Amino acid sequence: MVLLLVRGLPYNHFSGLLEGVGVWFFLYLPTFLFITVLSILVGLIVRVRILASGVTLFVLVVLAFRQTTWTDLLSYLTAEPYTLIFGFGPGRESLLFNRLYFLAFSLSLLLAVLWLAHYWLPSNKGQISRAPVLGWAVLFLLAVSGTALLGSRLSYLGKHLVAKPDLQTLYRQESFCDNLRNYTVDLEIDREGKIARSTAAFQVSNGLDPKENILLLRSLTENQLEFSESTPGNYQIEYSGQFILPNYATDNLI
Image (cartoon, rainbow, N blue to C red; front, side, top):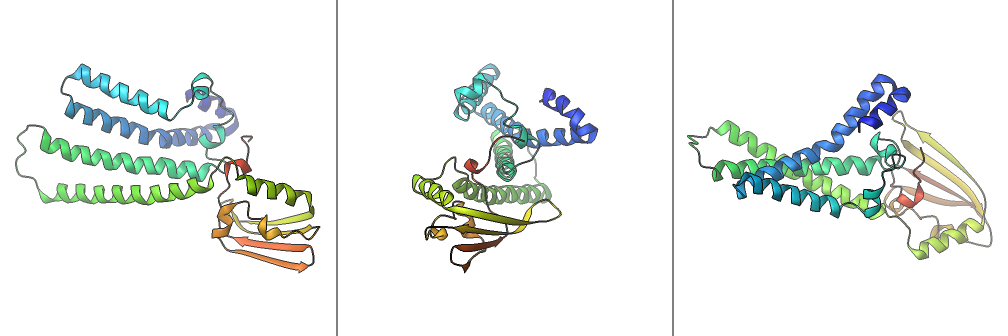
């Protein structure tokens, strides 16, 4: 992490370095909270300190291996995750919801474990005032609700962020590209750098029906999409709003 930030200093200046630190903090804050929750929970169950540390370490190693391939362990390529680390590229939305989901999930677990520890550990608890209990309940409900909403959005993104299209769609795409004669695309970009509206005009031959081939991006079907034919073989597509780019539609180059 430190090497990446130092290497990025000549290109981003000091403000870019601070932004990079903020991004790394956002990336690893959910992990830090999850490890804290795991350590507290294991400490409540296993009261021997050395044994509890061993169990915590074992669980973390197992979780790390479940989310990692052997190629990731043997090689570390900074070119591939670089666009994700600094928030550029089509992977930004999925990265954002992924980290927010695990942040809300870890907060939910942390509040639940603290509640469990309060009643589990022997101590002179005394009388509990309503304000802390009400504050804990509100935070817990917000964390659980956020986990559910963010998880739903993350699941929706996962349905479209596929590595490869299905074979039938892939074969139709090749046929469509072979019959494509020319095309133009007009993009309207908002102040945040996002595509607000787009118009694509193209011409195909051999009586090919573009409606069966153009929806290679499945998320386009769930947005406002207007399809029209001006003259035989000449079509125009207008769409507005956002759509999800699958992984096979982009590469790892900056």
